Amino acid sequence: MTCQICGAWLPVGAMFCGECGSSRTATVASRKRPDPRPNDTTIIARLPRSPVVISVPIPVAVPVPVRAAAVVTAAPTTAPAAVPMAALPTRATFVLKFSTGQRVSVHGSGLIGRKPLPQPDEIFDELIRVADADRSVSKTHLEFGQHDGEFWVSDRVSGNGTVIRRPGETAEQLEPGRRYVLPRGTRVEIADHSFSVA
Image 1 (tube, one colour):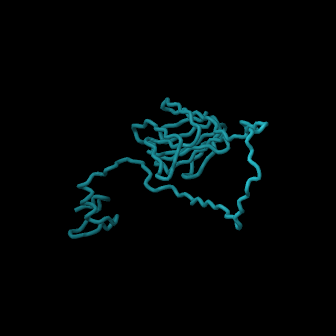
Image 2 (cartoon, one colour):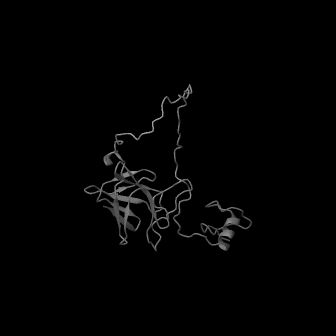
Image 3 (cartoon, one colour):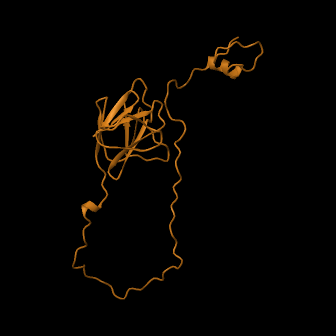
């Protein structure tokens, strides 16, 4: 009898393979049961996230309520000052041009992949699906977002990795879980597909 995992010869009555260490029951089970998800690049392990701690200072002495001395019934004569539009936080619009011909305008954060799906504790503005019959792109391949008007991406431990090509620079392989700021004109390669940031 031979091991169904590595093909090594097994003596009669052997419980484990001497070459790869797999059990005889595992090799028998592998012949009976096909892989339920062949060639799947789904992320099983969650990305490590640092816990968020929010602290609110508690005043030592509680202030005593003050009674109003007079009631104002007339409307104020001066209008409140308007907040200038420049002071409000704005999110820039970026256009992602995919090699599949798809163009998507994004304003906030999101996920890119074959069938992107956030973790239960995550919220994103966009979920962008990439048509990939060959399954080279992971289901949740890449995360993107904005910080101070700049566009960033982060590889989500994808099966085939992510490469960025900033204008005038050499190609760079992304380290999973780390954010990379991309200027407009950058090309992002996700397995057999790519998109440019405009």
